[in-house]
Image (cartoon, rainbow, N blue to C red; front, side):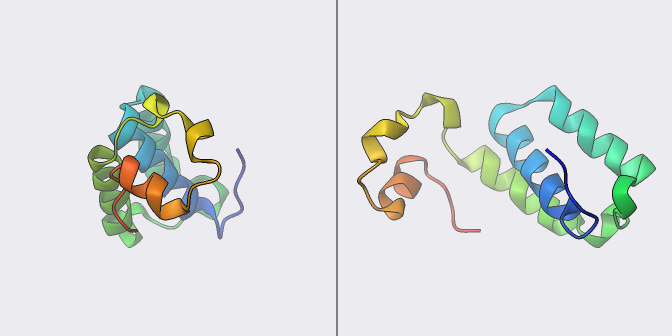
Length: 90
């Protein structure tokens, strides 16, 4: 997955969510290296730290994303899937 400098904080939020939800060690590594080396013109981590913390917490609160049978929700409204995953609003 590649991001432009403008999208990089969004990619870091995705990594923080994955870390909270799945505990992926690679997400922790990506966040650490992004904070240290600031690739792709990434702004300093303190500029979007609150967003990362919120994404991590949303990931922790959400049900395991791998445990859901998404084919059962193809015809359902998005809100039904959000409730099944216990996904808080962003």
